Length: 607
Image (cartoon, rainbow, N blue to C red; front, top):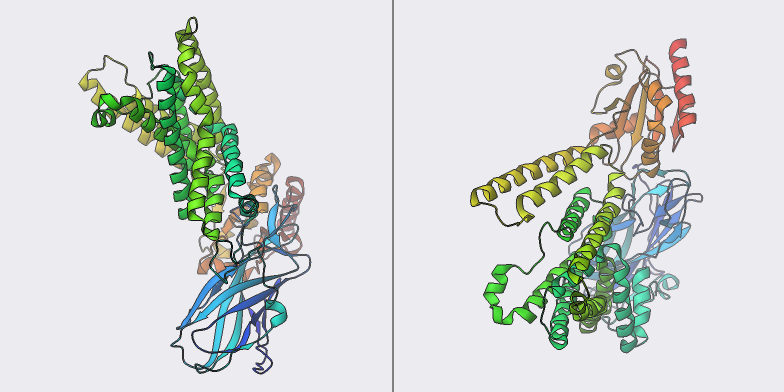
C-alpha cells in the first residue's frame, strides 16, 4: 500500500511548468506551479490536484472524528525556500455504512493550494520542490491503511531583475477557495480558510459590530442551557443568600463584580484554549479528563448535600482585608465560578478565537469575548441581586437547604451524563466506576470535609487515608482503561513465526486491525462478543495484529499476507496455509463470522 508509483512529465519552461503526477492506487496527485520562471525573493503558489478513484473517498483535512486520519500536505525542506499556508478545501459531509456518525470527506477531484516564498539569496537554476500527500482512503464498507502520495514540481529561478513568467493561469486565476477577501482585517494578499462555524460567526461580525455584540450576548445567554452550567445556579444562590443585611443596591454592586469575574475568566480561558489549539470536545474522549470532570462535579454535589461550604479562600480574604470583603469577595468568587463554567463554553470560544486570529480583529474579538461572558453571567446577576429576598421568605432557611439538595441530586445526574459515554468504551466498566468513586471518596474524606471537632492528629490521619484511597482509585481506573476484552483469549502478535502460532495444532485466525478503523471497533463490540463466536474461538488460536502504527516486524508480516485494508480477517489451517476463500476485508457480523469459523474447522479436519 505504501509502494508509490511516480510518473514524471518532462519540463517545458517556455509554456509553463507542466504537472507531475503520482498515483497511489486510490489517489492521483498532480502538482502545478503558478510560475514557470521567477527571480529570487519572489513568492508564488503551488496547486495540487487530487483525484480520488471512483467508489472511494479520503478523509478531509478536518475529519469529524479524531480516529480518522486527516489529509495533510507536507513539503520536503529546501534551503532558501519557505513554505507558507496550505489551503485545504472544505470537506463534504456524508454518511457511510461503517460509521455511526457522518464523516467529512473528499471524493472525486479537489484542489489544494500552498504558498511558497523564495529567499533573495537563492541562486539561479532549476528548483525542484517535492513533498507528499498523507491520506487515508475508504470505500463505503471500510477504510484502508494510511498512505503517502509524493509529488514534485519544477520552477526555473532566474537572476535578479529578470522577468517573472506566470503559468497555469486557468488554475490560479480564480483562487478564492475559502470566502476570503482582502481588506477586511487580513494581511494584504493573503487568502484564509475558514471552518463552517467560523464562517457563520464571520457573517454575523460583517453585518455590523453592534449586531455582533447583540448576537454574541445572546450566544452567552444560550450557553446557560448546557448541562454543566446548571451547578452555578445553587452556588450563586447559596453564596449571596448567606449575605444577610445587605441592601438591594449593595447586592447589585457585588453581583456586578461577581459577573465581571465570570466574564474575565470566560474570555481568558477561551483565548488560552484557542491559542493552545485545544479542542475541549476531543478532551472529553480522554478517560482521565472525564474522570477529573466527574470528580469535580461530584465534589460540588457533595457540597450541596452539606459536606462542605464553597467560600472564598480565607488567605485571599485576609490579604485583601475584611473591609473590602464585599466587592473583592464577589469578584474572586466570580473568577472561581468562571473556571467551573468555561470548559462547557470552550467549543464556541475556540471557534471565535480562530476567527479573530484570521480576521486580525484582536480588539473587537476581545470585546466580543467579554460581551459573551456578560451574556452568560446575566442570569447570575439577577439571582445574586434578588437572592436576599429568598432568605426572607417563610422558613426560607430550610427551603434553601432543600433547594441545595435538589441541585445536588441534579449534579449527580450531570456527573453521570459526562461519565457514562466514556465508561461505555471501557471493557472493565466496574473497575472504571470503582476507581472514579475511590478518587472522589479519597478527595472528600481526606481533604474536603471541614466539619468542626476534628483533632489535628485525626486531620493528619484522614489526609494520609485520603491519599491512599486516591492512589487505589488511580490504580483501579488505570487498569480498567487499559483492560482488554477477556471473552476471547486473544494473542497479540509480537513477531512470532507461523510455526510458533500453529504449534498447538489448531487453526489460526488473524484480525489485522487499527485504532482508526471504525469497522474494527464495531467487530470488537458485536462480533467478538457473540456467545457462539466466543465458544468457537476456544478451538482456534486467535491473534490480533495491531496495524495502527506498525513497526518493521509487523509491516513485514502485513506484506507477507498482502494486508491493505482494515480489518483484514484471515484463517490459517493447522499446517500454516491460508484458507483463501475465507479471507475478508471489512466488517463481518456475528452470524456470518461464526459460519466462517465453522468452515475453517471443517478445513482443519479435512487436512
